Amino acid sequence: MPASDRTTRVLRVDAADPDRGALREAAEVIRGGGLVVFPTETVYGLGADATNEQAVQGIFAAKGRPSDNPLIVHVASPQDLAPLVAAVPPPAEALLERFWPGPLTLVLRSRGAVAPSVTAGLDTVGVRMPEHPVARLLIELAGVPIAAPSANRSGRPSPTKATHVIEDLLGRVDVIIDGGDTGVGLESTVLDLTQDPPEILRPGGVTLEALRAVIGSVVEHQPTAAAPDVAPRSPGMKYTHYAPKAMVIVVDGPDIEMVQKINSLAYEYAEEGNRVGVMATAENRGSYLAPVVLELGPRADLAKVAAALFGTLRSFDQHEVDIVLAEALPEVGIGVAIMNRLRKAAGGRVVRV
Ligand code: TXA
Ligand code: MG
Image (cartoon, rainbow, N blue to C red; front, side, top):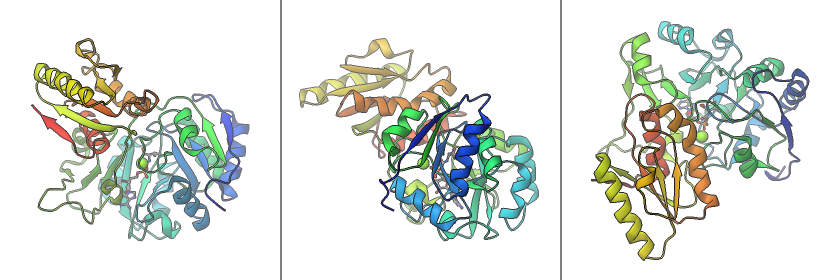
């Protein structure tokens, strides 16, 4: 069926204590090969039965997602990992013991139990057990693993509220479960355990430091100018992502110089006839001279900034700005994932002072 020909039902549930009846209805849609958007603790996911090839192809069509970008498989319990993978090596055991349920996706050799499109032709599969009560109950009631990318149209910021999903996917999915705001606000950490040492393909909710504390050696995947990501191992990382309609420019440097540079760029772009927005932290928001200044939260509390990032990027669309000047944030802890998403939203445009 054409991607935009579905009638979308929106089901509101209490995130902490979801109504079983409503989730049973949504689980039936999954079992019948339909598409269900559900909240997780990271971002909203666009789910289908991971064992049903036709249903999985519906995900790619609804998102407008390139077919070479594999999907994460969501399970309801740690025991559900073994049937999906060739083997569960000791580091995987230790990691799921410590971080599941939670924002960590483990990439392991696939056993071929999921539909071919899920893994986009790779011999590996990414699996995660989400913590959100709605996600967990939905997967349990569906009785099948659920393949789910973030529930945005391809290229847009990932959704952290049901309203974001409605903006992007109304008429393109069968059910949207509205469970309120997601918690972390950035997607899971994707860790490739088929490499030695294990490699972070996408930084996310579980930090490098936290992973190292459990399994020792972990490396970060670094595309370089000499070896750009032409055949990336996490194929999703090569596409433009997280972008609002405006052009985003990140400004990086010591606080005072950064604020001054943002103000001088704001002036120059306005002179050229652009409507300028600034994405500011709480500490600096009073220092900007621009028609639109949106606040992310305090730089002293990066978890708050992470939770607000995607929603704030989307808000600039409502303010109809042409340019967004964004403060860089410190790359410590969750700050690594924040800057990863911000650089992608900016298509690599970073000004250093
Ligand atoms: O927090 C999350 O991970 C959210 C929620 C819904 O669970 N999901 C999510 O999915 O962010 P998506 O499709 O937007 O991002 C999945 C990322 C992509 O970069 C993809 O390339 C990578 O994980 N990935 C999935 N399977 C992989 C595999 N077998 N090998 C390498 N990378 C993989
Ligand atoms: Mg995504």
